[in-house]
Image 1 (cartoon, rainbow, N blue to C red):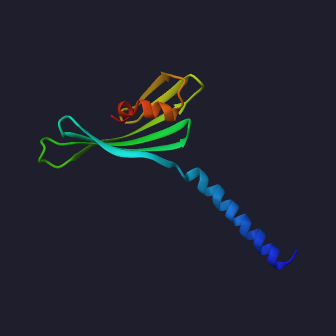
Image 2: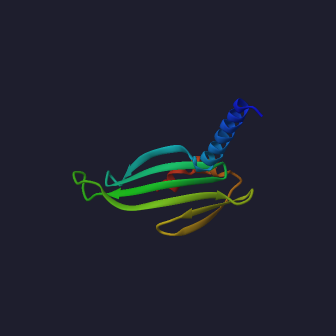
Image 3: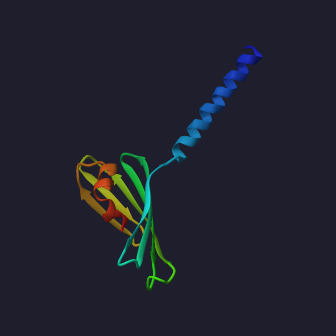
Amino acid sequence: MTKKSFTVITMLFMVFIALQLATPAAAVKIDHGYIISDNGLKKVDYTTQIHDSKHIKIYTTIYVRDNIRSPWALLLKRVTTLDKMDKDTLRITTSNPSLIKIAFTNLNAVQYYWTHKYDLVQ
């Protein structure tokens, strides 16, 4: 094997390994924003990440304030996970407070998120 072909094979192998390591860690952010409710006294910041069509994570941070002129105070941080268990059930797991809910639907996790977005975020 010549020195040039060995270098090319080594470079291709390193690129292949780098792609294998980077792919599982890369979650795609599909939605982010905030919702203000209760006459401007509650604000919910959310970021939604999709891992595949069966698994979604929603990171929410809830802020409150006493009146319109006061600054926002952190109330809680929450992570909601949507996992498609089989073709008819979807498991919704929420942290802080811990809650597990089963939804009987034929929608996948992404379709369920877009149809029930505001219920899941708040």
